[in-house]
Structure formats: structure tokens, C-alpha cells
Amino acid sequence: MLENKIALVTGASRGIGRAIAVSLGEAGAYVIVNYAGSEDKAQETLALIREKGGDGEIFKCDIADENECSEMCKAVLDKHGKVDILVNNAGITRDKLVMAMSDKDFMDVINTNLLGAFHMIRNLSRNFLKLKGGRIINIASVSGVLGNAGQANYSSSKAGIIGLTKSVAREFAGKSVCVNAVAPGFIQTDMTDAMPQSVKDAAIETIPMKKMGQPEDIAATVKFLASEDAKYITGQVICVDGGMAI
Image 1 (cartoon, rainbow, N blue to C red):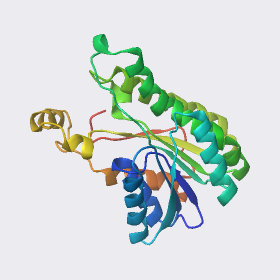
Image 2 (spheres, rainbow, N blue to C red):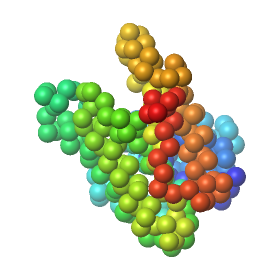
Image 3 (tube, helix red, strand yellow):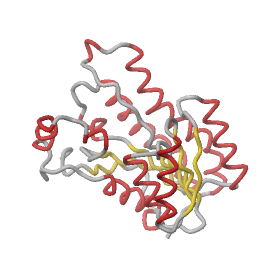
Image 4 (cartoon, one colour):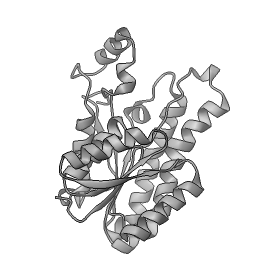
């Protein structure tokens, strides 16, 4: 399905990013597993990719740092000659009510979630235009569609991802580069597992399907958008959220 494709997935050491990397690898892509923190977790992702019959490598880079981002993109292009699929997944949270949120709380999230995605797209833009094809898939959030109390920074960053997606889709459409966003809802990850059950129960009540999603639900949507089946889809935001954004 994705044989001979090079895929770069940011924030791929755990959670949704790991599921995406494994899914793309299983579909035949060679996966660059980007991580900023734990090398051990990134190696676990790579091992899972190889267990599924795929292959790839890990690459440490803080995408909020333009120099690191530029160096990673250059190294990948020098080694592999191209990047066919870019998945901008890396993200952080610094949740607080707006009255207690500092400038640093706000900008740390913007710098990783939004500026980091911009860094990746800008550094690989010539690559995609030269390919006259390829896929850029940005991981937004239902929080960027609806807003969420206590997440002014995160919601702003993800709303920004949606705007970035639509603008870049318009810029690149003439070269047949498809640029789309996936907006996850309440997905079961290590982060949600650590929440008190009462908080999880309250969140589930806001979901029409009355259950959390799985990382694999997001990965399946990304894999579809990365495939030839999605060659005429661009500039779209697909909510994978059990109906939260209806």
C-alpha cells in the first residue's frame, strides 16, 4: 500500500504518534520515528514497526527548535532523497484556567504544537513540491474545533493547525500535494489512563458514542489519508471523535 514511501512522524515515541508510525510501517512505508525525550520509547516504537514487518529508524529532534528541525529534515533528505509522508503529531499540554496561565504556559504549547508543525512543513516544502505529490497530515484536536475550558493554549494551537492545514493545502494543491488534518477526540492513551476515573466518566458523557477512542482509530484515518485512495482529498479536517463535534 505504501511501499517505497518514506514517512516522517513527529512525536512518535508513544500514544497516538506510535500507533500512526506502526500503522504506516505495517503498510509498507519506511518510517522515521521522531522523538524529543525518551530514546527507549522511540526504540520500542521501532521494534513494534519491525514486528509488523516494516522498517525505519529513530531521530531525536525538538521540532520547536528551528535549527534542530532543519538539521533533521536535511539529514533525512540527504539519506533517503525524499519524504513522501509527513505526519505532524508532536504536541504538549500545559492545562490551566486562563486567569492562571502564564505567557510561558501559552507559548510553550504554541511553539511545539503549531510552530513546530510550521517548521516541519517549511523545511520539507521544496521536497514536496519537487515530488509533485505526497501527503502532509497534521494532527489537530477536537479542542481546536470546539474549544475546551482550561486549554486556551492547546485549543489555540490546534485551531492554528487547522488554519495552517487549509492555507498550505491551497498553496500546494497545484502540485498534487494533499494536506489534511485529523482532529482526535477523547482518545485512550497513557495521559488519559492517569486521569481520575470521575474525570474520565464526565468526559465520556460528552461523547455521543459514550466511549473513548483508541490510538489505532487515529492511525487508520492517517493511513487512509496517506494512501492513493485519498489522492483527491485536501484541505479537510476529519474529526475522529465519536461524535463530539457534531
